[in-house]
Length: 159
Image (cartoon, rainbow, N blue to C red; front, side, top):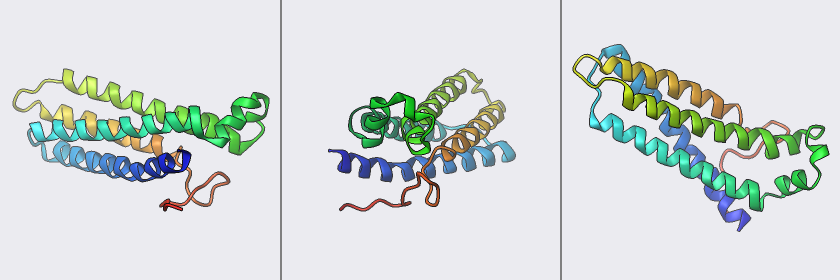
């Protein structure tokens, strides 16, 4: 069960990252051009929210039930802080991603509170530009990029 779920989690990462990049770009364009916020923008925010939510759900399942790194860390909590590999997979990666999801939920809730009247859309675009950019940076800091001690391949293939 670990390998198939890890494969899904690895590929879903790209959906989330691409979605956040597009959300950032679309929001920045709307902010600069001062266009009107439409239902299409709201739908896109919802789609990114769904992708991020499922990604974190898959990650939590791996983290709490399947990962050999988490199992080793939970079995020896005193070693987590002294072992960079255990620290990354048991603490840093999962907690940062859960925080990113929480920040996205806050951003989405705040977005709903902003005015939707004509001319007020610039505030929504500004808010989503800043939020999507910050969340993207937060997520990027906790991805196991190749070349790091705990790094993984950019694309995981079935074995």
